[in-house]
Amino acid sequence: MKRTSALSRIANVGLTCVLLWSAGTAVASAQTAAPPEVPATLNAVDFNFVGQANLGAPFQVDSGRLAETKATSAAIRSYAHLMVTTHIPVVDALNVILKRKDITPSSTLLHGAYDAMIYTLTADRGAAFDRNYVNGQVEYQKGNAALFEQEIQNGNDPELKEFARQTLPKIVDHLQRAEKLAADGRLASK
Image 1 (cartoon, rainbow, N blue to C red):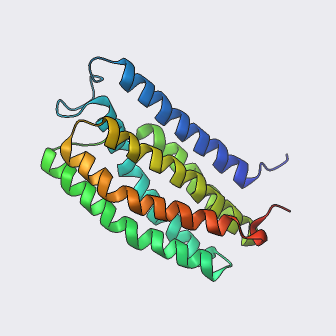
Image 2: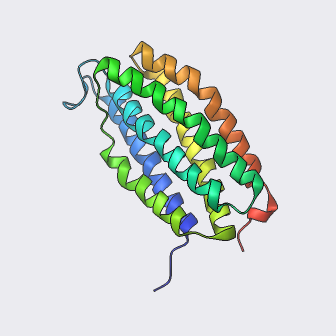
């Protein structure tokens, strides 16, 4: 049986995440009331944001830790270290808000997608790891920027909107750094 490339699996999972996010946004826009599982203090956009951001930051830490040890390039290891060190405070800041509001995010739809991406990165080696990690970061950061922009524009909760405003510039920086790494000709497919 031919092994599906890790990059295409990550891209498919990334597409799935984007589609889930897009579908959540469409549903949020179309609904007049939040879904029944949404805490009374959150609208559907805030609820979607909390679930994805709450799982995304730990994913960045986990995948970054893998890349710190597995990447073949010092530049990629440095980027991965940045992902670990900048996302730990993001996780902490979001958790403070969630605890204060007594909100438990629902992220079950994305758990499987992120687990699959971590599994794929764990199995990759050498240049394939570098390529898949960096290209995955570009796609992830694009989706993450869109998620945070959506919260800023359409969220209701002032604390979550402010959290998104403060965090978005870091995401844009991470995207630009990932795009620079991806432009490196050594990451091109065989």
